[in-house]
Image (cartoon, rainbow over all chains, first blue to last red; front, side, top):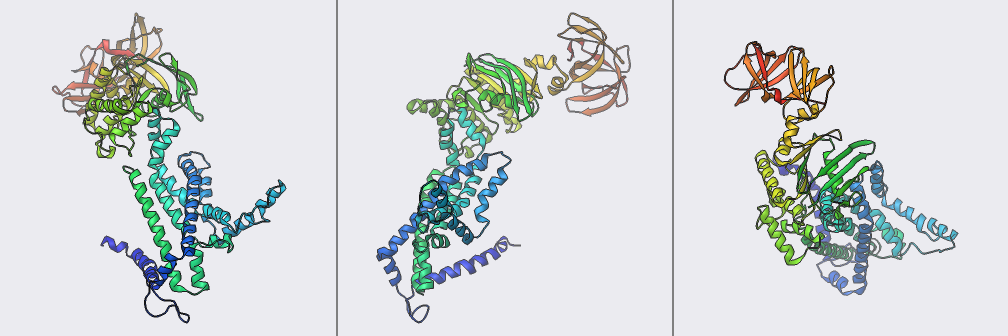
Length: 277
Length: 350
């Protein structure tokens, strides 16, 4: 039995359902629009020219990346301490904590969004409670705040799990050794634990960044039409305006931009990860 | 360099007592080993001295300084772990430099010290290597260099040789011991390997079940063990049971079913008390046949060990003793033999 044969089913899946559609989109992005068909005859660079010259679409791309960066930073800031605790705790509640971390993945994204709407709406639970204290009401949704809250909630596990795995594989003796050499617990963290957990941080950051840059349902439902990101506009182009070639181009530009950001991030962290793992 | 004092140290984890009322005084420049089977509390004791565990009861003093409640970073210690605990993301030089930086040594002085300590552990020129590029023995020496470079008051070693192969372990024993002698650094060494403890230590502390059974020089521990556990843990021991018939000035005469023997003791024992004495295999000699010797038995097993033959001899009261004889006369299994006992080497146990 040749070993590559074992990979064949997965390769077929990837080939059929990822590579072929992607190539299809690439071809589509060079097509001209047509009022009567999905696309018109011949090939054109107009779609790319339009996106790269129109401040509207460039601004949209910038907003999308800012949402992704904001979500990623918040997920890291909130997720790292949780990951550290989960990796090191010997508490009997560990299993429960772990389930809590995974809980955002246990229901569908639409249901979760409605949950957030119940909480964040102008007459929602949070504003009612604030009202009792004589505060508000505040606008917590149909704006970037609501979208970011929901994005962070949904993608947090993708930050926590890889970091937790990385910290678990760091020998606790390393921290102890640093302490015996005169390092305070804070310096031990900065000089030993953090650098050694970088592989997990790297995976977590990339996962959350890519997922939140391409998120559609959350900005759609919690943005309530007031928040536009590249994915929401792509869907508008496909479903609303039926401009398939332009939608395809927009989607590709977003993918490519995200790829560049990930590559830059990879290059920046590679140096810091020399000798790790 | 400092004197280390441990006073009435106890440590419990939850309801489980790991260390109980341990007292120990280590003189300046002395090399003391904590020896015992796994779970005897030796590592917990060491970790309390390092500050990695907080004692439940008791005090730890470096010189006159009470460090009991100080975190490890304020104790001026160097520690070597069984797994070496080298930082994988730092080069050898950076690993050692870390210890200097944390003590505020930087620049040229740091460079000089790193080169110096690498020379001491025979790893000259290895600064730029990463730990994973080194052999186990080399990693071990980097860990040692890292522990020593900041000139700590106290060197703590937790089974540092356990992960090395036998030949390297042998070499490193002598290496660490001669380095410690040269630097005159007060050292506490944890091991479960009795020959390691014997070769390296000025004094050995033998622990079982969280308690110290005996503290003494290697020859004291070997020839005059305090308890049966100590006697059995350090080399082979034959246990002889009997009743004391006479005690005079540190020598007791004991009557057993198979005869009488004399044994040394450090305490007075009342006549008529039931006691156990121990004698090492090399203090027994075999002679063919039952002569007028006071000790006769029957050979129940015989094993060839190369340089010696190992005999198991059953005595009249059912005790089986181990005797080692130079390969030569070969009394067969089942033969009746007499045993000569070197009476200076029999020791009464507590």
